[in-house]
Image (cartoon, rainbow, N blue to C red):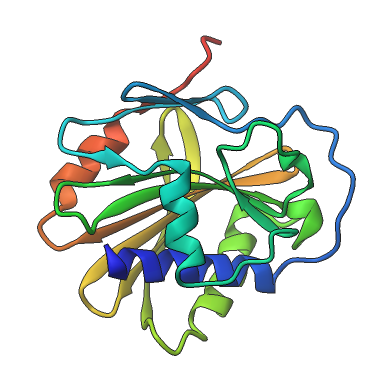
Length: 209
C-alpha cells in the first residue's frame, strides 16, 4: 500500500500548506462510524457498504500510516476514532480509508474546514489550489487529465483526475457542505477500475430525505 500512502501524505501536506488560523464552527459536524461492514456518516449523508473484496483501515492503522510518513501537527489535523475529541476545531478530519483486493488501490474520505484554510472557495477553485501544491511534490509526479462533474451516492461532485507516476489514476471527488469540503480520493492501479467502480456504486445516502 506504500504508493497509496505516499499519495495520501501528499494530499495532507497540501491541505496543511493551505491552512490558516482557527475560527469558530457552530455546525453539527460529526465523524462517521463503522457497524460491521457498513460505514455511516450522518453529517455528510453518506453510507458505504464494504464489498467482500475490500478491507477497511482502523483508526489506529490510519494514524500509523500517516505518522509513519509525515509528522502532522496534532493541532491542525487528526484522525477519526476518538469520540471525545472536538473535531470542529480541526482543519481536516480523515474519516475512513478502504483498500481494494490488490492491497494498493484505495478510497479515502476527508473533510476540510474551509473557514480555517482557503475560505469561500468553490469545489473547482479548491481542487485547483490543491493541485498547485501537489505538483510541487519531489516524490510523486502528478499529471492533470481532466476535471468534470459526477454523481456519487446521490450528490454531485467536482472531480479532478490525475495520473500518478504514470502507473496509477487518482481522482479527487469534492463537494461543498456548509463550511467544509467533503473530499473522496480514489487511487486506482491499472486493472482495478472495475473493483473501484463497484466500491463507488456502494455509496448511498445515509438519511432518507
